[in-house]
Image (cartoon, rainbow, N blue to C red; front, side):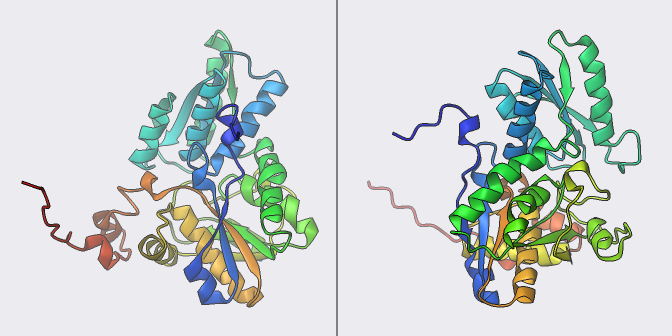
Length: 343
């Protein structure tokens, strides 16, 4: 029998999926790590599990305690689900601009949701900084105490990927992986996988959305963030603790229009309906494959499912408002389906 003991045991060990269109276009094998198959439907389940375990092991999180975090959504969902399975309460702070689907899922997972205005990190009311103050306040009033998960600067996040995601990729490719690339939110996934694979000779790439500043930093030494992006949960303007000591071998800035073209093609032709960060990742993998040359195996992360962005990425009206392309199939009239009831 193959039985997982609890929800935490079902996190990780996700399959690699060959991305046919991207592979055929580049002459490389481009593979996506299907992180949307985690219990919370995102890559952030791994970080959530390691952050909670670390807090418990340190004695910071007591039975019945409260987990507080500022998140664009997926980490909050992971913390709420893993926390609930272990007997913890969660309070999640989210920028009010994030998708309604993620807000609904946080509530469905049993967490209390606090929405704040979307303001830069330098603003004291930025969702991350607000969540830190809230955790400190709740620690004084909650009977069983409260902790701040602090995904951006808590290196338990990076360790999750160094100990699980990276080794899984190495084993699943029989050590034949040539490169790995993904975007950065907290930096845990990219830096953690790099810690596991760079020493083995695997080349590591950064795929940065417009409006983020890491591509600029790694290529010029200056933090500059031109443009903007509709993607959620990625894009960073500072070196978080998870990124400290990390340097990519390749770096690309990927516009939304390029990422959306990849996403819409996958949905129409390969049955993969994914979130915006996955589009940035795959577009980055295509660029990296072209630069490295045919015959290489490039792995990226399929971070979450498109059902968390149905009212945005897959909404023609929203796309038009943002001046972004709308694929024909998204606006096609439904075909007439005959009725076949027996009399």
